[in-house]
Length: 111
Image 1 (spheres, helix red, strand yellow):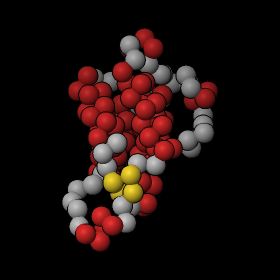
Image 2 (image 1 turned 60 degrees about the vertical axis):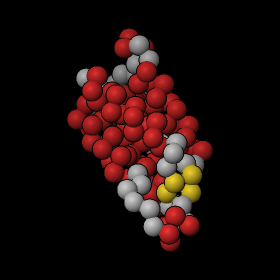
Image 3 (image 1 turned 90 degrees about the vertical axis):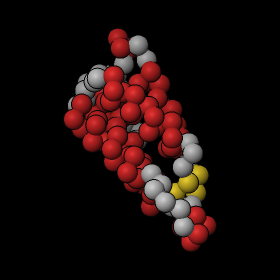
């Protein structure tokens, strides 16, 4: 993964803490985070880039009164995923997850 993609992913992940979305929006973010985890561990750069874009697009783009009233802060389960991804992306290169490194490369607790 190139440094530009890594930095872009970190920026998106750090922004999530400030988002307020409807439940359906958080579900979309959760799917994107799961894809980020999976593709990062599989060293699938193209898939990871797509997953980062999916998470970013799931974020808030405008605020309206009705939607704002039903918006929620980031759910704890997603906050934990975000923290794990940030940790993985900030780890020295030799310590970053690779294919099969976590959960044997198969489905895990977040799938």
